[in-house]
Amino acid sequence: MTVDRMQPGVPCLGCLALVVSLLRLTVMNHSCRPSFDLRLFLAAVVFFPAGQAVAYDEPFHEAELIFPLDEQHNHAPGVAELENGELIVSWYRGSGERTADDVAVYGSRRERGDAAWTEPEVLVDTPGFPDCNTCLMVDDDGALWLFWPVIIANTWESCLTHYLVADDPAGGGVPEWTRNGTILLKPDDFEQQSLEILEGYLGELGRDLAPREQAAVEEIKSRLGDKLYQRLGWQPRCKPTVLPSGRILLPLYSDTYSFSIMAISDDDGASWSASEPLIGFGNIQPAVLRRSDGTLVAYMRENGPRDRIRVAESTDDGLTWGPVGVSELPNPGSGLDGVVLESGAWLLIYNDSTEGRSSLAASLSDDEGRTWTVTRHLERDDAGRYHYPCVIQGRDGTIHCVYSYFVEGGKSMKHAAFNEAWVRAGD
Image: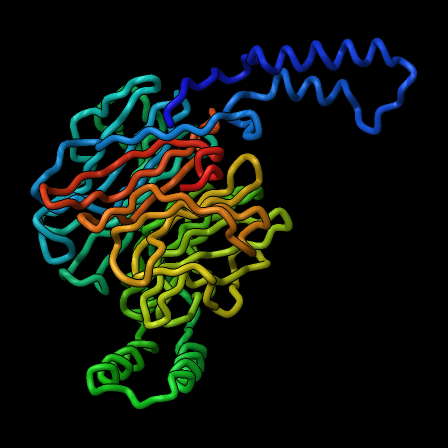
C-alpha cells in the first residue's frame, strides 16, 4: 500500500485531537495523579518527527528500477543518503566480474522529492583491471566514502580494497573526489588458530572428503601461513559501521580462506588496522550491528554446507570475535545486509531460502537479533534473482533498500522505499 507521508516535525490532525482530549481530561480530573509525566508524553506526540514515531505510521512501500534493464552484468550495490537528503547508489557494471577487465563502478543519484534517478555515470574505472563490489558511507562531516576492490590478477584472491572520499558530494553528477587511499592490512599470524578450527570443522562432518573437497582443503592449508595471502584478497561488501567512539569498522572478507575480518580506523579513516579474523570457513560478507550494551553482532553470508546465515559477536568494539556460529535464518549462499532502526528494532534483508535467490525477505527482531519474529518479502518470484541487498534508514525514517535485480530481459538495480510498519504488516 502506498500512502502520503507526513513531513518531519509536523503534527498530524489525529495527534492534535489526542492532545486536546488528554488536556481536557487532565483539567476535568485535576486531582488525579497519573503514573507518567503527561507533559512529556504530549510533547513526544506533537513534536516527534513523523517517520520516526513508528507506532503512528501507516504502512507504505514504493519501488522502482534505478535504470532500464541492461544486457551487461550489473551487480553489488551500495547506498547512502547525503546531508541534503539526496540518495546516491553505486554498483559495478561490465561484461563479467573478476575476469572481465572492462568492469567499472557506476553510480546514480535521486534528489530528495524526485521520482527519477539520474543516468548512470562512471564513478571510478581502473584501466585494465576489474573494479567490483561497492559500499558507501557518509561520515559525520557529510563526506561521502566509496569503498571497492581492484582485482589485480583476475582472481578474488588477488583483490586490493581502495577508497575515494568526496568532502562535498552534493550538486549532482560524479562527486568531486578529494581524497583516496588503499587499505593495506597486516593481520597477526592466524595460521595455527585457523588450522585448529579447520580440523574441528572437518571432524564435525562425520564423513570422508571427496577428492575435490580434499584438494580444496589442502590448498587452504597451504595458504594459511602465507603472508601474501594473509594480507591480500580482503574485499568489502556491506557498509561500514561507525561506533559511538568514532571507530570505523569496515567489514571485509576473503575468498582465499572463506572467512572475514574487520578493517579498523580510529582516526577518521587516515589509517587502518586489522581485527582478529572471524574464522568459520564458510562465513563471508559480514554486516555488523551494535546492541545497546555495546556488543557487536556480525551476520554473514553462508559460503559452506550449513545453509544458514553465520553469526559472531564481539565485546571489545570489533578487535576480537567469538566463535562463528549458525543462526536460525536460512541462506542459499548470497549476500545480506542489516540496520538498527530508530525504533530500536533490527532489520535484516536476505534471501530466505536454501536454494536460489528468487525470494528476498525483510525480517525484524525486537530483541537485538536474538530472535526474528516478523518477515515480509520484497520479492518472491521464481522468474528472477533478487540479491545482494544494501539497506539504510533515512533521516525521515524511511528505509531504503537497493538490490541487484536479474530477470530474463536484463539486469538492473532496484530501489525499495518502505517503513517499519510495512514490514510489521507481513505478507
